[in-house]
Length: 449
Image 1 (cartoon, rainbow, N blue to C red):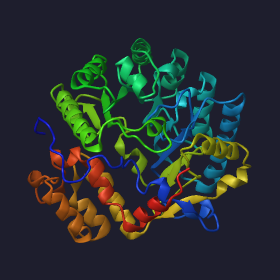
Image 2 (image 1 turned 60 degrees about the horizontal axis):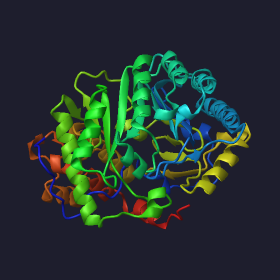
Image 3 (image 1 turned 180 degrees about the horizontal axis):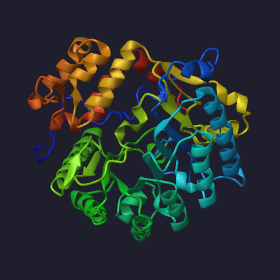
Protein backbone atom coordinates (compact mmCIF):
# COMPACT_ATOMS: atom_id res chain seq x y z
CA UNK A 1 0.00 0.00 0.00
CA UNK A 2 1.27 3.45 -0.81
CA UNK A 3 0.99 5.84 2.14
CA UNK A 4 -0.74 9.15 1.83
CA UNK A 5 -4.17 10.48 1.20
CA UNK A 6 -6.80 8.94 -1.05
CA UNK A 7 -8.05 10.94 -4.01
CA UNK A 8 -11.84 10.84 -4.27
CA UNK A 9 -13.04 8.96 -7.35
CA UNK A 10 -15.77 10.43 -9.58
CA UNK A 11 -18.36 8.60 -7.48
CA UNK A 12 -19.27 8.95 -3.83
CA UNK A 13 -16.88 6.70 -1.88
CA UNK A 14 -19.29 5.84 0.93
CA UNK A 15 -22.47 4.35 -0.46
CA UNK A 16 -23.06 1.09 1.43
CA UNK A 17 -21.19 -1.35 3.61
CA UNK A 18 -21.58 -4.66 1.75
CA UNK A 19 -21.43 -7.11 4.66
CA UNK A 20 -23.88 -9.52 3.00
CA UNK A 21 -25.32 -9.85 -0.48
CA UNK A 22 -28.17 -9.54 -1.21
CA UNK A 23 -29.17 -7.19 1.62
CA UNK A 24 -32.25 -8.06 3.66
CA UNK A 25 -34.14 -5.17 2.07
CA UNK A 26 -34.13 -7.28 -1.11
CA UNK A 27 -35.76 -10.21 0.70
CA UNK A 28 -39.47 -10.83 0.24
CA UNK A 29 -42.08 -13.18 1.77
CA UNK A 30 -41.54 -16.68 0.38
CA UNK A 31 -44.48 -18.28 -1.39
CA UNK A 32 -45.64 -21.40 0.38
CA UNK A 33 -43.12 -21.03 3.22
CA UNK A 34 -40.80 -23.83 2.04
CA UNK A 35 -39.88 -26.52 4.56
CA UNK A 36 -36.31 -26.35 5.87
CA UNK A 37 -36.00 -30.11 5.51
CA UNK A 38 -36.52 -29.76 1.74
CA UNK A 39 -34.23 -26.71 1.45
CA UNK A 40 -31.32 -28.51 3.15
CA UNK A 41 -31.92 -32.03 1.79
CA UNK A 42 -29.29 -31.89 -0.95
CA UNK A 43 -26.95 -29.31 0.60
CA UNK A 44 -23.45 -30.12 1.87
CA UNK A 45 -23.70 -30.19 5.66
CA UNK A 46 -20.26 -31.31 6.78
CA UNK A 47 -18.78 -27.82 7.38
CA UNK A 48 -21.63 -25.47 8.28
CA UNK A 49 -21.35 -22.09 9.99
CA UNK A 50 -23.58 -21.41 12.99
CA UNK A 51 -24.76 -17.92 13.97
CA UNK A 52 -26.87 -17.14 17.05
CA UNK A 53 -28.45 -13.68 17.17
CA UNK A 54 -29.26 -11.84 20.41
CA UNK A 55 -31.35 -8.72 19.62
CA UNK A 56 -30.77 -6.76 22.84
CA UNK A 57 -28.51 -3.82 23.75
CA UNK A 58 -28.20 -1.66 26.84
CA UNK A 59 -28.30 1.44 24.59
CA UNK A 60 -28.72 2.02 20.88
CA UNK A 61 -25.84 3.92 19.34
CA UNK A 62 -26.72 6.87 17.15
CA UNK A 63 -25.29 5.23 14.01
CA UNK A 64 -26.82 1.79 14.56
CA UNK A 65 -29.38 0.31 12.18
CA UNK A 66 -28.97 -3.27 13.36
CA UNK A 67 -31.90 -5.42 14.38
CA UNK A 68 -31.86 -4.81 18.13
CA UNK A 69 -33.94 -3.30 20.91
CA UNK A 70 -32.92 -1.32 24.00
CA UNK A 71 -33.26 -3.29 27.19
CA UNK A 72 -35.61 -6.17 27.88
CA UNK A 73 -38.70 -6.25 30.09
CA UNK A 74 -38.79 -8.79 32.90
CA UNK A 75 -38.76 -12.30 31.49
CA UNK A 76 -38.11 -11.38 27.86
CA UNK A 77 -34.55 -12.74 27.64
CA UNK A 78 -35.75 -16.02 29.14
CA UNK A 79 -38.64 -16.16 26.68
CA UNK A 80 -36.25 -15.37 23.85
CA UNK A 81 -33.87 -18.18 24.82
CA UNK A 82 -36.87 -20.51 25.11
CA UNK A 83 -37.82 -19.62 21.52
CA UNK A 84 -34.21 -19.94 20.38
CA UNK A 85 -34.15 -23.46 21.83
CA UNK A 86 -37.40 -24.35 20.06
CA UNK A 87 -35.99 -23.02 16.81
CA UNK A 88 -32.74 -24.92 17.29
CA UNK A 89 -34.65 -28.14 17.77
CA UNK A 90 -36.71 -27.59 14.62
CA UNK A 91 -33.65 -26.68 12.56
CA UNK A 92 -31.61 -29.63 13.86
CA UNK A 93 -34.45 -31.96 12.92
CA UNK A 94 -34.58 -30.43 9.44
CA UNK A 95 -30.83 -30.83 8.94
CA UNK A 96 -30.96 -34.47 9.96
CA UNK A 97 -28.01 -36.73 10.69
CA UNK A 98 -24.54 -35.77 9.58
CA UNK A 99 -24.66 -32.01 10.09
CA UNK A 100 -21.31 -30.70 11.32
CA UNK A 101 -20.20 -27.17 12.20
CA UNK A 102 -16.84 -25.68 11.31
CA UNK A 103 -17.34 -22.33 13.02
CA UNK A 104 -19.74 -20.39 15.24
CA UNK A 105 -20.52 -16.80 16.15
CA UNK A 106 -22.77 -14.99 18.62
CA UNK A 107 -23.85 -11.56 17.40
CA UNK A 108 -26.58 -9.01 17.76
CA UNK A 109 -27.38 -6.66 19.23
CA UNK A 110 -25.05 -7.45 22.08
CA UNK A 111 -24.78 -11.14 23.06
CA UNK A 112 -23.17 -10.16 26.36
CA UNK A 113 -26.37 -8.30 27.25
CA UNK A 114 -27.29 -11.77 28.53
CA UNK A 115 -26.20 -12.49 32.08
CA UNK A 116 -23.64 -15.21 32.78
CA UNK A 117 -26.16 -18.05 33.39
CA UNK A 118 -28.00 -17.01 30.21
CA UNK A 119 -24.75 -17.14 28.24
CA UNK A 120 -24.23 -20.66 29.59
CA UNK A 121 -27.65 -21.55 28.25
CA UNK A 122 -26.86 -19.94 24.88
CA UNK A 123 -23.76 -22.12 24.60
CA UNK A 124 -25.80 -25.16 25.60
CA UNK A 125 -28.27 -24.45 22.79
CA UNK A 126 -25.41 -24.30 20.29
CA UNK A 127 -23.81 -27.48 21.60
CA UNK A 128 -26.59 -29.74 22.84
CA UNK A 129 -29.37 -28.75 20.47
CA UNK A 130 -27.34 -28.01 17.33
CA UNK A 131 -24.36 -30.27 17.92
CA UNK A 132 -21.65 -27.61 17.54
CA UNK A 133 -18.49 -28.36 19.52
CA UNK A 134 -17.65 -24.82 20.62
CA UNK A 135 -14.32 -25.82 22.13
CA UNK A 136 -13.16 -27.42 18.89
CA UNK A 137 -14.14 -24.75 16.34
CA UNK A 138 -13.57 -20.99 16.07
CA UNK A 139 -16.15 -19.08 18.15
CA UNK A 140 -16.49 -15.31 17.75
CA UNK A 141 -18.56 -13.19 20.17
CA UNK A 142 -19.48 -9.51 20.08
CA UNK A 143 -19.50 -7.42 23.27
CA UNK A 144 -19.76 -3.87 24.55
CA UNK A 145 -17.63 -2.31 27.30
CA UNK A 146 -20.54 -2.11 29.75
CA UNK A 147 -21.45 -5.79 29.35
CA UNK A 148 -17.92 -7.23 29.24
CA UNK A 149 -18.08 -8.18 32.91
CA UNK A 150 -15.74 -10.68 34.53
CA UNK A 151 -18.42 -13.32 35.09
CA UNK A 152 -19.70 -13.14 31.51
CA UNK A 153 -16.18 -13.26 30.08
CA UNK A 154 -15.35 -16.26 32.28
CA UNK A 155 -18.28 -18.16 30.78
CA UNK A 156 -17.24 -17.28 27.22
CA UNK A 157 -13.60 -18.25 27.82
CA UNK A 158 -14.55 -21.53 29.48
CA UNK A 159 -16.95 -22.43 26.67
CA UNK A 160 -14.34 -21.99 23.94
CA UNK A 161 -14.53 -18.40 22.68
CA UNK A 162 -11.53 -17.79 20.45
CA UNK A 163 -12.33 -14.21 19.39
CA UNK A 164 -14.06 -11.36 21.21
CA UNK A 165 -14.98 -8.17 19.35
CA UNK A 166 -15.41 -5.07 21.49
CA UNK A 167 -17.31 -2.08 20.09
CA UNK A 168 -15.34 0.91 21.36
CA UNK A 169 -15.74 3.33 18.40
CA UNK A 170 -13.71 6.12 20.08
CA UNK A 171 -11.45 6.52 23.09
CA UNK A 172 -12.38 10.23 23.21
CA UNK A 173 -15.36 10.73 25.51
CA UNK A 174 -16.73 13.73 23.59
CA UNK A 175 -16.66 11.75 20.32
CA UNK A 176 -18.42 8.81 21.93
CA UNK A 177 -21.16 11.16 23.10
CA UNK A 178 -21.38 12.69 19.63
CA UNK A 179 -21.96 9.22 18.17
CA UNK A 180 -24.64 8.66 20.84
CA UNK A 181 -22.56 5.99 22.51
CA UNK A 182 -22.45 7.13 26.13
CA UNK A 183 -19.35 5.60 27.68
CA UNK A 184 -16.29 6.83 29.53
CA UNK A 185 -12.78 5.91 28.43
CA UNK A 186 -12.02 4.66 31.94
CA UNK A 187 -14.82 2.11 31.62
CA UNK A 188 -13.56 1.05 28.18
CA UNK A 189 -10.04 0.54 29.51
CA UNK A 190 -11.37 -1.47 32.45
CA UNK A 191 -13.33 -3.72 30.07
CA UNK A 192 -10.26 -4.27 27.92
CA UNK A 193 -8.30 -5.24 31.01
CA UNK A 194 -10.95 -7.82 31.94
CA UNK A 195 -10.92 -9.26 28.41
CA UNK A 196 -7.16 -9.71 28.49
CA UNK A 197 -7.39 -11.30 31.95
CA UNK A 198 -10.00 -13.76 30.64
CA UNK A 199 -7.42 -15.14 28.20
CA UNK A 200 -9.53 -15.14 25.04
CA UNK A 201 -6.96 -15.59 22.24
CA UNK A 202 -8.07 -12.87 19.83
CA UNK A 203 -9.22 -9.39 20.80
CA UNK A 204 -10.79 -7.22 18.13
CA UNK A 205 -11.44 -3.52 18.74
CA UNK A 206 -13.92 -1.62 16.57
CA UNK A 207 -13.22 2.07 15.91
CA UNK A 208 -15.19 4.60 13.84
CA UNK A 209 -13.89 7.53 11.80
CA UNK A 210 -15.93 10.47 10.53
CA UNK A 211 -17.59 11.34 13.86
CA UNK A 212 -18.62 14.99 14.23
CA UNK A 213 -15.78 16.91 15.86
CA UNK A 214 -13.19 14.19 15.18
CA UNK A 215 -9.85 15.45 13.92
CA UNK A 216 -6.78 13.72 12.56
CA UNK A 217 -5.14 14.25 15.94
CA UNK A 218 -8.04 12.77 17.93
CA UNK A 219 -8.33 9.86 15.48
CA UNK A 220 -4.65 9.07 15.95
CA UNK A 221 -5.22 9.31 19.71
CA UNK A 222 -7.92 6.63 19.53
CA UNK A 223 -5.75 4.44 17.32
CA UNK A 224 -2.85 4.65 19.76
CA UNK A 225 -5.12 4.00 22.74
CA UNK A 226 -6.33 0.83 21.02
CA UNK A 227 -2.81 -0.22 20.03
CA UNK A 228 -1.71 0.01 23.65
CA UNK A 229 -3.71 -3.20 24.22
CA UNK A 230 -1.94 -4.99 21.33
CA UNK A 231 -5.21 -6.21 19.82
CA UNK A 232 -4.89 -9.08 17.40
CA UNK A 233 -7.43 -7.34 15.15
CA UNK A 234 -8.73 -3.84 14.56
CA UNK A 235 -11.75 -2.86 12.49
CA UNK A 236 -11.87 0.72 11.22
CA UNK A 237 -15.40 1.66 10.20
CA UNK A 238 -16.47 4.82 8.37
CA UNK A 239 -19.41 6.49 10.07
CA UNK A 240 -22.68 6.16 8.19
CA UNK A 241 -25.79 8.18 8.95
CA UNK A 242 -28.76 5.99 8.03
CA UNK A 243 -32.54 6.56 8.10
CA UNK A 244 -34.44 5.79 11.31
CA UNK A 245 -31.28 6.00 13.44
CA UNK A 246 -30.46 8.61 16.09
CA UNK A 247 -27.92 10.36 13.89
CA UNK A 248 -30.23 10.02 10.91
CA UNK A 249 -32.76 12.22 12.68
CA UNK A 250 -30.01 14.71 13.52
CA UNK A 251 -28.48 14.94 10.03
CA UNK A 252 -24.90 15.44 8.82
CA UNK A 253 -23.28 18.77 9.76
CA UNK A 254 -21.09 19.00 6.66
CA UNK A 255 -21.86 18.77 2.99
CA UNK A 256 -21.57 15.28 1.57
CA UNK A 257 -18.41 16.20 -0.35
CA UNK A 258 -16.72 17.60 2.77
CA UNK A 259 -17.67 14.58 4.83
CA UNK A 260 -16.50 12.16 2.14
CA UNK A 261 -13.15 13.93 1.89
CA UNK A 262 -12.70 13.93 5.67
CA UNK A 263 -13.52 10.24 5.98
CA UNK A 264 -11.09 9.39 3.19
CA UNK A 265 -8.33 11.35 4.93
CA UNK A 266 -9.01 9.61 8.23
CA UNK A 267 -9.16 6.21 6.53
CA UNK A 268 -5.74 6.78 4.93
CA UNK A 269 -4.28 7.97 8.22
CA UNK A 270 -5.64 4.94 10.08
CA UNK A 271 -4.55 2.49 7.41
CA UNK A 272 -1.00 3.82 7.23
CA UNK A 273 -0.75 4.08 11.01
CA UNK A 274 -1.59 0.39 11.45
CA UNK A 275 0.52 -0.84 8.54
CA UNK A 276 3.52 0.94 10.04
CA UNK A 277 2.93 -0.85 13.35
CA UNK A 278 2.94 -4.44 12.19
CA UNK A 279 -0.66 -4.92 11.07
CA UNK A 280 -1.73 -6.40 7.77
CA UNK A 281 -4.73 -5.11 5.86
CA UNK A 282 -7.32 -7.84 5.28
CA UNK A 283 -10.05 -5.63 3.82
CA UNK A 284 -11.01 -1.98 3.77
CA UNK A 285 -12.10 -2.34 7.40
CA UNK A 286 -10.15 -5.20 8.87
CA UNK A 287 -6.53 -5.14 10.04
CA UNK A 288 -4.83 -8.11 11.68
CA UNK A 289 -1.61 -8.15 13.65
CA UNK A 290 0.99 -10.05 11.62
CA UNK A 291 1.62 -12.56 14.43
CA UNK A 292 -2.03 -13.04 15.41
CA UNK A 293 -3.53 -16.54 15.41
CA UNK A 294 -6.12 -17.23 12.74
CA UNK A 295 -9.35 -18.06 14.57
CA UNK A 296 -12.07 -17.18 12.07
CA UNK A 297 -14.71 -14.51 12.53
CA UNK A 298 -13.48 -12.25 9.74
CA UNK A 299 -15.30 -10.44 6.98
CA UNK A 300 -16.33 -13.68 5.30
CA UNK A 301 -18.61 -14.83 8.12
CA UNK A 302 -21.81 -13.23 6.81
CA UNK A 303 -21.11 -14.41 3.28
CA UNK A 304 -20.48 -18.13 3.68
CA UNK A 305 -22.69 -20.69 1.96
CA UNK A 306 -23.93 -23.25 4.45
CA UNK A 307 -24.87 -20.75 7.17
CA UNK A 308 -27.40 -21.67 9.85
CA UNK A 309 -28.77 -18.60 11.60
CA UNK A 310 -30.82 -18.87 14.79
CA UNK A 311 -32.69 -15.94 16.28
CA UNK A 312 -35.12 -13.42 14.86
CA UNK A 313 -32.44 -11.24 13.25
CA UNK A 314 -30.28 -14.03 11.81
CA UNK A 315 -29.87 -15.05 8.18
CA UNK A 316 -29.44 -18.57 6.84
CA UNK A 317 -27.83 -19.44 3.50
CA UNK A 318 -28.21 -22.46 1.31
CA UNK A 319 -26.66 -22.50 -2.15
CA UNK A 320 -30.03 -21.64 -3.69
CA UNK A 321 -31.83 -19.53 -1.07
CA UNK A 322 -31.04 -16.90 1.53
CA UNK A 323 -33.71 -16.60 4.21
CA UNK A 324 -34.50 -14.99 7.55
CA UNK A 325 -37.37 -13.50 9.53
CA UNK A 326 -38.78 -10.06 8.76
CA UNK A 327 -36.43 -7.07 8.97
CA UNK A 328 -36.89 -3.66 10.57
CA UNK A 329 -34.90 -0.70 11.92
CA UNK A 330 -37.65 1.22 13.73
CA UNK A 331 -37.79 0.29 17.41
CA UNK A 332 -41.55 -0.32 17.51
CA UNK A 333 -41.35 -2.62 14.50
CA UNK A 334 -38.41 -4.52 16.01
CA UNK A 335 -40.26 -5.03 19.29
CA UNK A 336 -43.22 -6.44 17.37
CA UNK A 337 -41.03 -8.90 15.46
CA UNK A 338 -39.32 -10.04 18.68
CA UNK A 339 -42.67 -10.47 20.43
CA UNK A 340 -43.89 -12.57 17.50
CA UNK A 341 -40.71 -14.67 17.57
CA UNK A 342 -40.94 -15.55 21.26
CA UNK A 343 -44.58 -16.61 20.92
CA UNK A 344 -44.01 -19.13 18.10
CA UNK A 345 -44.43 -22.88 18.56
CA UNK A 346 -41.64 -25.18 17.41
CA UNK A 347 -43.48 -26.14 14.22
CA UNK A 348 -43.36 -22.54 13.00
CA UNK A 349 -39.56 -22.68 12.94
CA UNK A 350 -39.47 -25.56 10.46
CA UNK A 351 -40.20 -23.33 7.47
CA UNK A 352 -38.52 -20.35 5.80
CA UNK A 353 -40.53 -17.12 5.69
CA UNK A 354 -38.61 -14.25 4.09
CA UNK A 355 -35.76 -14.58 1.65
CA UNK A 356 -34.40 -14.48 -1.84
CA UNK A 357 -33.61 -17.19 -4.35
CA UNK A 358 -30.02 -17.17 -5.57
CA UNK A 359 -29.80 -17.53 -9.35
CA UNK A 360 -26.61 -18.23 -11.28
CA UNK A 361 -26.04 -14.53 -11.89
CA UNK A 362 -26.61 -13.60 -8.25
CA UNK A 363 -24.31 -16.37 -7.09
CA UNK A 364 -21.56 -15.12 -9.40
CA UNK A 365 -22.02 -11.56 -8.12
CA UNK A 366 -21.86 -12.73 -4.53
CA UNK A 367 -18.72 -14.77 -5.13
CA UNK A 368 -17.04 -11.80 -6.81
CA UNK A 369 -18.10 -9.42 -4.03
CA UNK A 370 -16.97 -11.60 -1.15
CA UNK A 371 -13.63 -12.26 -2.84
CA UNK A 372 -12.52 -9.04 -4.49
CA UNK A 373 -13.29 -6.89 -1.44
CA UNK A 374 -10.59 -8.79 0.43
CA UNK A 375 -7.12 -7.26 0.18
CA UNK A 376 -5.61 -10.49 -1.16
CA UNK A 377 -8.04 -10.46 -4.07
CA UNK A 378 -9.62 -13.39 -5.90
CA UNK A 379 -7.80 -16.30 -7.53
CA UNK A 380 -9.23 -16.47 -11.04
CA UNK A 381 -8.88 -20.25 -11.13
CA UNK A 382 -11.38 -20.59 -8.26
CA UNK A 383 -13.91 -18.49 -10.11
CA UNK A 384 -13.40 -20.32 -13.41
CA UNK A 385 -13.72 -23.71 -11.74
CA UNK A 386 -16.97 -22.77 -10.05
CA UNK A 387 -18.64 -20.83 -12.88
CA UNK A 388 -17.03 -22.11 -16.07
CA UNK A 389 -15.91 -18.72 -17.27
CA UNK A 390 -13.92 -15.62 -16.48
CA UNK A 391 -15.27 -12.67 -14.45
CA UNK A 392 -14.30 -10.39 -17.34
CA UNK A 393 -16.79 -12.33 -19.49
CA UNK A 394 -19.57 -12.10 -16.91
CA UNK A 395 -18.94 -8.52 -15.71
CA UNK A 396 -17.20 -6.71 -18.58
CA UNK A 397 -18.75 -3.27 -18.01
CA UNK A 398 -18.21 -3.24 -14.25
CA UNK A 399 -14.59 -4.39 -14.40
CA UNK A 400 -13.83 -1.95 -17.21
CA UNK A 401 -15.16 0.92 -15.05
CA UNK A 402 -13.11 -0.24 -12.08
CA UNK A 403 -9.96 -0.41 -14.20
CA UNK A 404 -10.60 3.04 -15.67
CA UNK A 405 -10.92 4.51 -12.17
CA UNK A 406 -7.66 2.91 -11.06
CA UNK A 407 -9.40 0.54 -8.67
CA UNK A 408 -7.79 -2.65 -10.00
CA UNK A 409 -4.19 -3.61 -9.30
CA UNK A 410 -2.34 -4.21 -12.60
CA UNK A 411 0.49 -5.87 -10.67
CA UNK A 412 -1.78 -8.69 -9.49
CA UNK A 413 -0.78 -10.78 -12.50
CA UNK A 414 -2.86 -12.90 -14.87
CA UNK A 415 -4.06 -15.35 -12.21
CA UNK A 416 -5.60 -12.97 -9.67
CA UNK A 417 -8.14 -10.13 -9.59
CA UNK A 418 -7.12 -7.71 -6.88
CA UNK A 419 -8.01 -4.16 -5.92
CA UNK A 420 -5.44 -1.39 -5.87
CA UNK A 421 -5.00 0.73 -2.75
CA UNK A 422 -7.45 3.22 -4.29
CA UNK A 423 -9.91 0.45 -5.05
CA UNK A 424 -9.75 -0.97 -1.54
CA UNK A 425 -10.33 2.51 -0.12
CA UNK A 426 -13.43 2.80 -2.31
CA UNK A 427 -14.83 -0.64 -1.42
CA UNK A 428 -18.11 0.93 -0.30
CA UNK A 429 -18.60 2.40 -3.76
CA UNK A 430 -17.30 -0.58 -5.71
CA UNK A 431 -19.40 -3.17 -3.89
CA UNK A 432 -22.80 -1.61 -4.65
CA UNK A 433 -21.90 -1.34 -8.35
CA UNK A 434 -21.89 -5.15 -8.45
CA UNK A 435 -25.50 -5.40 -7.23
CA UNK A 436 -27.80 -6.84 -9.88
CA UNK A 437 -30.55 -4.63 -11.38
CA UNK A 438 -33.17 -6.87 -9.76
CA UNK A 439 -31.63 -6.53 -6.30
CA UNK A 440 -31.30 -2.76 -6.76
CA UNK A 441 -34.96 -2.51 -7.73
CA UNK A 442 -36.17 -4.53 -4.76
CA UNK A 443 -33.97 -2.61 -2.33
CA UNK A 444 -35.32 0.68 -3.72
CA UNK A 445 -38.91 -0.59 -3.45
CA UNK A 446 -38.50 -1.78 0.14
CA UNK A 447 -40.80 0.04 2.56
CA UNK A 448 -38.37 1.07 5.30
CA UNK A 449 -39.75 0.26 8.70
